[in-house]
Image (cartoon, rainbow, N blue to C red; front, side, top):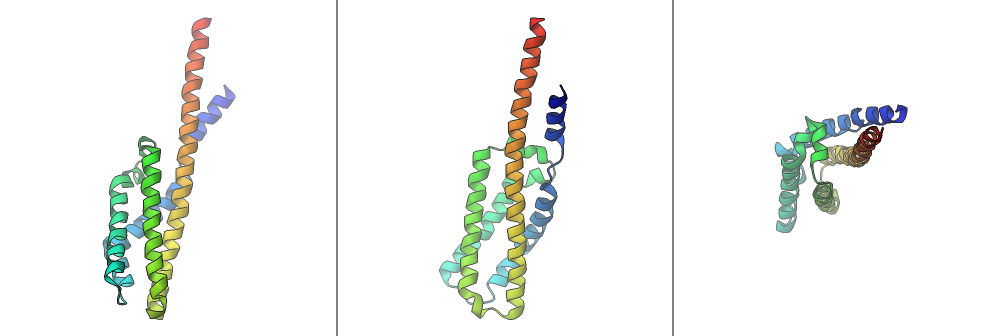
Length: 164
């Protein structure tokens, strides 16, 4: 019973990574939806292909936020999403970020020092958000496993209770 209570407390304790995700997601969302990221990256002449990749990637951020943003106000909702879909969509988002990074790296010498500083700041936030999301996904997997174990434990307790 003691272990059962400990597992229950672990399951219902708030996600330690959630605060980082909320803070960084709010920053990234504001910078992307305001157009600031696109404007900053586009301060140099980009090829048509680079512009298309940039637009697609920024739209990917908005779509991800629309699909999964509700868990920020209710972390329990993260357990209701398909883990496979979440992982695939997040991997797609990460791939888009890598494509934008390649565009910035290719054009880095063309940016002014001030723009380079701004882009470096964006990158720091993106990396921190990625770390926080990865931790949250791992915690969600862990909590899902604990939840499943608790369900099995409840079932066993009921079976044992009915045998007495």
